[in-house]
Image (cartoon, rainbow, N blue to C red; front, side):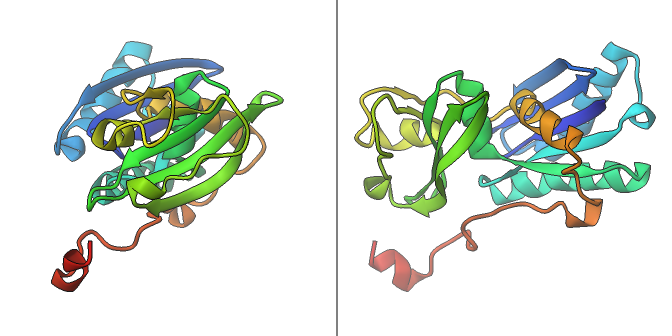
Amino acid sequence: MRFAAFETSTEWCSVALWLEGEIAGIEERAGNRHSERVLPMLEKLFNMKNIAASHLDAVAFGAGPGSFTGLRIACGVAQGIAHARGIPAIGVSTLEAIAEESAEERVLACLDARMREVYCSAHERRDGRWHEVIPALCTAPAAVPKPPGEGWIGCGNGFAAYGPMGYARVMPDIHPTASAVARLAAPRLAAGQGVDAALAVPVYVRDKVAFTEAERSLR
């Protein structure tokens, strides 16, 4: 199987190719230039590996939660390629991608959601795959949950923004990458879980990008 993966939910922009079990990936801090950088980065990988979009069997993308604009960029690029090529697409949780990138076994993944909130979910690796212990939610930093049991590590830029939030060990520099998205997507695509381009959509978790004046006065 050959597929491309995209992750643009944070300030990082990353692209990866899964080529019969091998991964080639590149990433850069893009600020707000993800839409300008993602396709040139894909083209760079195509040239490095001497392949083209016509060789792809599927596409994967970081589906969210994260930056609304970033999620739409990754999803839009994946949809465009999938539709043009008639191949399946699959979205992967950005929080699960953080867990995958961490190389830990028990991870509370946490992203800064702005507006004094964070996105978070808890994932535990068992039997070679991730199991969601706490589903994705958007909450105030003070309300970030602690999963049952010991050995949980806090990962993601939510911890850079708001501190340890009750966790003894945190890794704030861990971020979702296209390579992590590719590793998570590969077995799911092999199992036929890819969908039509039109059905591949972002997962926002929160449905607003700003508070009203009244809401701000209460926070």
